Amino acid sequence: MSVINLTETAAEKVQQLIDRDERGGYALRLKVVGGGCSGLQYQLMFDDKVGEWDQEFQEHGVRLLVDSKSAVYLVGTSVDYVDDLNGSGFKIENPNATQTCGCGQSFGA
Image (cartoon, rainbow, N blue to C red; front, side):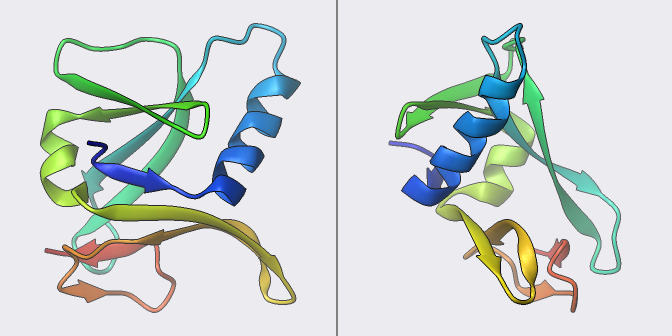
């Protein structure tokens, strides 16, 4: 079972971004770090190294990496990609967040 649910739309966007890079072999890493107005914030990045404490998953053909410290905060989280009049980007729905900031980039748990 994956810690994170990556929607098909998000997986397509991630794959497009990975395909732009000639090196390939990337996974999407979702990480939780301290900061932001609510105390914790998300980091999305591409990574080609699997660490000793990482959990690796696959959703819709995309490799996902989550370190064990972040996984505690991310169990059940859904990542989608939206593109509408308000802008485009990845949208994170985290059922573990007890508070969020207005911008949606940080949360408290």
